[in-house]
Image (cartoon, rainbow, N blue to C red; front, side, top):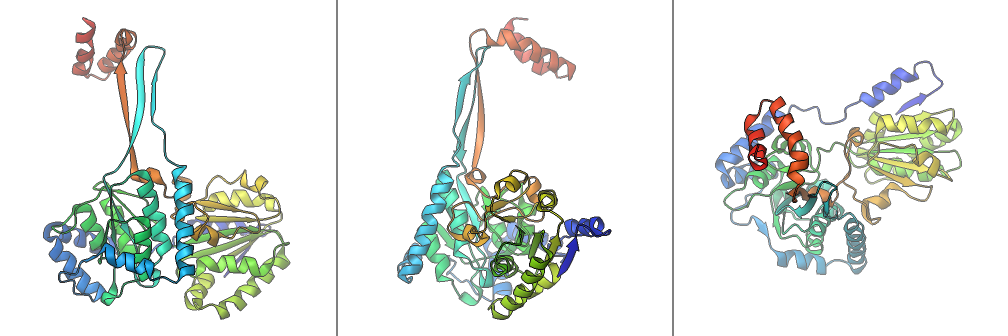
Length: 428
């Protein structure tokens, strides 16, 4: 675990290294992924079946799709308390994302030109849901519900089922979210199947959802064939906390992201050296108790960082450079700090707002930009499943008012046919 202090002479250089640290997988996966995508494009279902047998140890045969009835049975078979928790999460996610729906525009300006924009959902969306250790029903809800709220007619989920093992919670979440199709495939081959389409699987327009390095690379390479949400990397959390916090709370918050992935990153910024020491000690104690200790320990020891500042007034500038996926402001009055935070995936205000509440039941989406991408991108929303079409209508006399300027610009660009299409209407 790294310790930095803004008062140290070498702090600027050390912090620069922290900011530049790339925790995405360093495997040379681009070439392998390109080959898989091309193979699926050419051989379709046959290629998907071959890769599924090779990577997931599963022979698909005719059993590619999990029926809606099986998903319903999984939902109905849940422990009542867990079913109620899923329903609460779904309701809150749906309510929050309904407020994101954009409004069509239609108006006439001073020159008599009618201008506007109309929003429509994409026809079909593909949702990737990881299998194995990273099988999260919450992720399915966070991806599927905004798509349904946006008005997407067809939702197709792909999820690997290694050796045929299915996660019933994922199936229950698919039923609750109204998913239309669930396919037993994963990896880059599943992304290719969704993008290109196969004999069994119709193509989609947008693909969202988290995955490993091969899935992320497949989405990156296929952007343009389909829309994507983002190319996400390992999870990260930045906690800005004063010394009045309970160190056990802050240690737990840091480890809540460390347990995701050995490449995840947890950072604490505090103005209290003694508190920093306490948190570091408690992290060690908590690690001994966690079932996920192996992953969390590697993450914390490799990428964990504690930064001590002379004043928390320094924290927003550091946070903006880090542009973290999650930022907690664990102080009595978070608003002054929050006002200065410009780059973050999501911000959690106050001592009693742990990031984990946002992963499940708060309502805002937990699919967020990582790797400093919060500088230029946002979390998943209904807009990722919609597109805007502008429209123009020239009223009486409008072309006479603004047409000559368009003619002048077209001629300046050497595009005489552009100019002519306006001139003939003006009788020039």
